[in-house]
Length: 433
Image (spheres, rainbow, N blue to C red):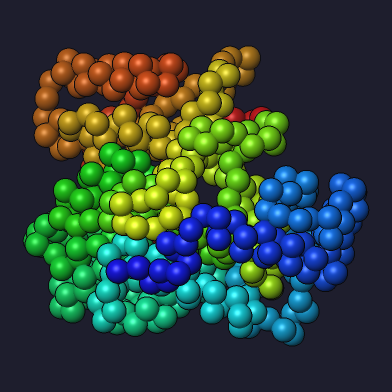
């Protein structure tokens, strides 16, 4: 099933015409309604009426997260607060948090793109969906909720946490769809086993997992554990929340709904667009939002993109799974390391569990040191010390062969690493940089 066949299967030339008209409209809209963008456009020497087609987008200035924080709380909004219908705020670990707002029309748009996303994953109207993303200031729960309502799904708004209750809901109500972070899906599997439940016998047949980068190895682990189709959803609160892109059942990339979110892939160092198929930083322009439209927003997410028609019939461009973020990247002795790369290696080694943490430190006058804590099957700890050392060495060699960086490895018993009911904390950086 395709939710909006007209837009999702549109001829690419027709799509380009729509994108061009919408870009001209949104450029003029922000120039007239937002002093920050007027200043940005003027500094770049560009006027909105000089934008003739979507190809002119590269003439426009970039927007970065600091623009939202520097203009906290409402400086980057293009409507007055009284004209908003909803506001969300990020947790903000340093400095001001980021604030995003939605007009009533924006909320309708959010429901529309999330309905497209659920259809991509294989949902059909009247399916039961258990939403275990957090509700509240985090955009995940409510975004999924609006899309499920738009599509006509039967919603169980479980929110995050209360894992035993989540499992009871699954066991009693038999929902077919689960929406949560991938790390939480694995945590629930652990708890299910402790309660004597068999994850593979669960009613969940479709998983819509996002809010954190996760590897193909993690996908296989989830699918094998829960006996479900595990699909990737992509979004970020600055753009709209979840619903920017979603995998279909063919799992050959995430369909990005480019009639409303125009994508570019750039070299993060030069800002120039890269060739199709090459990895780079994803940049998104919101073509139809009104509350807080963003022009060429640098997401910091590393992906590639392809434009050929998918087997499902959709013509929307597809981005790869996120291989990392430029701001989550760890630089160790000059080598770029992404947590998802480590995850992929670990889950390819029999005996490891899908829970790990990277500890980065730098002692006085010494080089950076990366230590990988990895949970391993309990039976590993019944082996002799010599065999444990051999297992550690195996992990070190595998990581070195993939990343070209030396790491220390610490094997820990199951449940040693703290669990999260939301986004997993993968990196602890102790360096004073």
